[in-house]
Image (cartoon, rainbow, N blue to C red; front, side, top):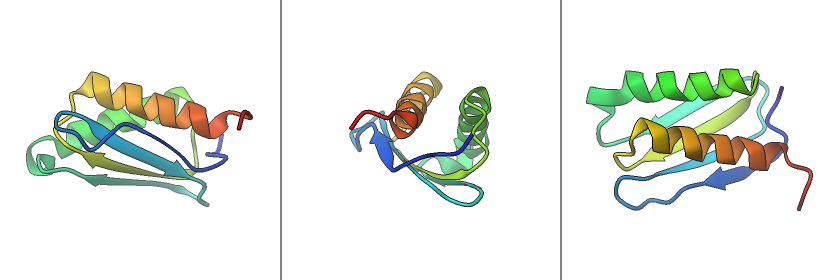
Length: 89
């Protein structure tokens, strides 16, 4: 499945993450985080699990992390993906 349109979820507040998705020819995952050196692999793993659950194979996913927990990252990414796939305007 592909990301159909631009969508986002989250904020840039402390302990949150702003996730933006948009259509692309391939799957691109961009992560910005002040804790990337310590938790970058875990953040990427969580994202790939959510994307796999939705069978997403293409799209650009951009995370602007502010120290969010795994559960927050999952919720924000799932919301952004659902908004992208939704037909409602």
